[in-house]
Length: 276
Image 1 (tube, one colour):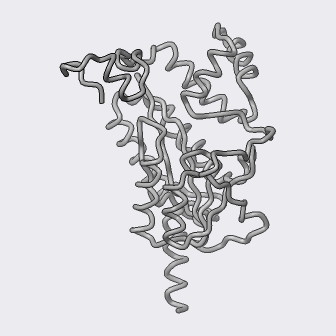
Image 2 (spheres, helix red, strand yellow):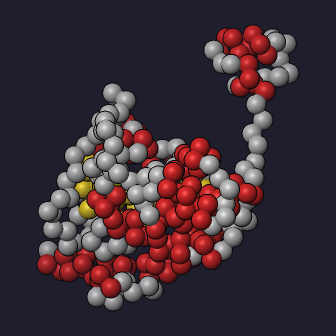
Image 3 (cartoon, one colour):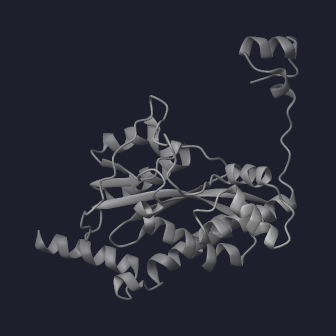
């Protein structure tokens, strides 16, 4: 946007674009190894204690001899896109363009594939950086239908994952997410509305409303991510691909009576087609 080789002075370019001059000279700095190590540990603690805020996490980290302050922990949590789970005042208030939809799954019996899909975003640590993962999960079978990695918390990679899932498996009846800005955006809700999908959103501070995706994150991180130190995004892609293939096709689930998500998903669909 700013051209440092242009004859027009940088100050004038910034003025025309209504940007602060500091923006034109800013050089992004890599995250330090110390901060990356703290972020990984915060992520582990957040999985164990999702209700812990910056103060409690600071105290837990100090018990492990990490000399950190509350503000530093809060900054790292914002960078990771995580927050303590508890009911907060006015949490449902959003930008006027971002509508909040009601939670539709309470007391709803979900026993067949493509009845309800769910999605969420999580932080994936690497040796010298981090990425974000968005996954689309079929609620009844626990099968991961599509997923995407991104190095930024934008809506684009979430849209790509949903579009892939719909193109491969058709549209579900209901799609459930949390109230994150990626999912409340007009681009995301518009895509679901265009396919005639009912939109459901978790209640404020209710992580249990999307519990199966939260369980997927825990399994993925403890059984794959924390066992490896990915050097590059490509390695992270390969690791997540390896694990989610195992998760779908090999890993037995107690909730599915020891069967795999893929077998459960395919068997239900075959039975429905036979009945039709």
